[in-house]
Each structure stands twice: as structure tokens, then as C-alpha cells.
Amino acid sequence: MSRSRMMSENARLVEVVLYVENAAITDERISDLTGLSMAEVKAALKEIKDICQDENRGLVLLEEEGNYTFIPATDLYDRLRKSYGRKVDRRLSRASLETLSIIAYSQPITRKEIDKIRGVSSDTIVRILREREYIKVIGRKDIPGHPCLYGTSRKFLIEFNLKSIADLPKLGEIDQLRFKKEDSEEDENDGEEDNE
Image (cartoon, rainbow, N blue to C red; front, top):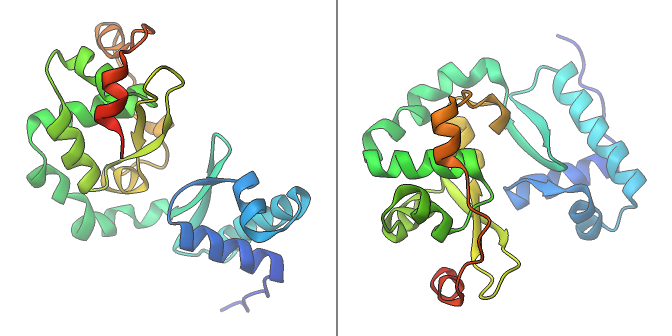
């Protein structure tokens, strides 16, 4: 077995921040949390990524749209699925799975935009999906009321055996039209309902 190489202090610090945050974060946020310069953060992230790959670790560093997080190595997904993956089929209703797929394909998306696509209120389902950590608030929409914007979580990727959102199956033309969000302004009540 080859000897593990020593990680630099900066890389160790960034690794801990990624672990403690337990969600994908930007390099700017890592810089803010650690006090490291952007150049130091980028060097540390590269070092972590290289070590994870070179040493065949159980976790790999994923960078997606400027956000960084740890995910399980893809060759472990089948073994992890026995304990973590199939729960999703038993625990989520058809309506929950429909809502989750709308969020996955249309994120970032507000609750009212989800309602428009589904044609019914999604308050309870969105709450359940948040409680079960399949989705999370990823920001606020810059319109009156500032409603929450929802996106999928790392747990969603793991349980659906996806390396990233880009690995979702491609939608047909009809589904693409159905999942398309309308860019109309939402009323202020929506923001109040979505407030934390």
C-alpha cells in the first residue's frame, strides 16, 4: 500500500470547512470562513481533489457551478444504495416524487412556480421534502416578498445515484415545456408564506 501524502495546512483547513458546512459552498465563502486568499483557496481545493483521486478515497471533491462539496466516490454508490438509496422509493409519495423532479429539473425555483407547474398547492410536500433533506433553500428571488428559491441537496444526488444534476435523464419536448417556469412576477403573499 502506498504511503499517504501529507496535506498542507491550508488544504486541511479547507477540508474541515467543507466537512463542517455540510453543503456545497463557493470558493469566495471558503475564503471568508478561513481568511485565506482566493489563490490559496483554489490551490487548496486542487490539492484536496488530487489527493482524493490519487489515494482512491471514499469521498471525492465535486465542483459544480462554482460550488464545492464532498460526495461519495461513484464506485461506492451501489454499496451505499443498500443502506441509503432505496429508502426514497418507500418514503416518498407519487406527488412528492413529482414535486422533487420539478425542483430537480427547474432549480432554482419558488414554491409558487412549483404550484403553477403542478396545478395544485405544494406547501405540505415542499415542507416534507425539506424535512427529509431532499431539497433546501438556496436563496431568495429578487421580487417583492423575496420568496425562497429551492434546489436539490447532496442527499438527493446520493439517493438517486447521481454524480451531479447534469446526470439527470434528459427530458422529452413535452416534459421540457411542462417543467418550464414562467418568468411572471409573483405576488408579495408568496414571499411571506415561504419565509423561514
